[in-house]
Length: 270
Image (cartoon, rainbow, N blue to C red; front, side, top):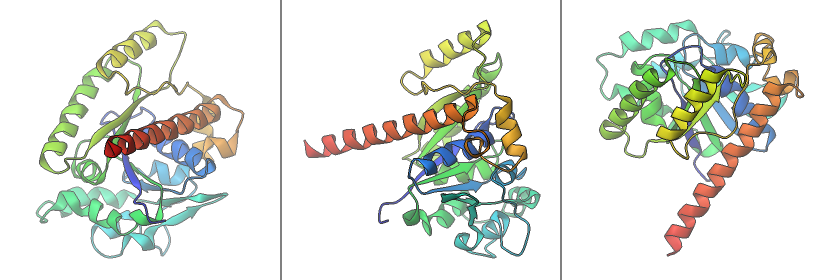
């Protein structure tokens, strides 16, 4: 696989918006659609690792050791059971120490990007699940990424947090990563019966025209159940609303990638 993987950071400094759920289930859907995918769990809580049935425990290094230059990233990669094309770099709570331990390191914001450079040729897509904060781990993810996918809940304070995140993305783009763009906004925990849900969705669509995914992720008990069983929802209950929605998102994501690639090719032919 000679082409370099597209690196997408999943970020939102607000917790509980379905960020890890999206990292797990979008990656799983893309792997079922034939893409080779790596998920990097860069959130010290490790929800993405456990949600994929993998932990940072055992003799294999995990993301913290890679950050501290104690092991190459390739040694930390683990396969996900039952999904041949899905892999994960797991994490443990000690990853939180990176924020303090690397405070004085030279080019500390580029460490993750340098680690990913060693494996980018082996995957189609690499997703980085960021912690719910805008600290060094998130800055590293945004510096390493080609684009940012923003999962957000349709609630009153969501737009306020969104503007802060967009400012951070702009700051990273100007300072460290000129190619960084917004991949798209994903509306999660969507409740179609709630009027506020529709008001927030309309507002987001107005400010981010063309960047909001048509697929929305509904509130679905199977999504949280599947994570507690260490499985993507599509492997836990493929007929559930959550599984159907994430597979639909995977297809929409790929259509957008193909359209962008065709547009780029058309532009270069002129």
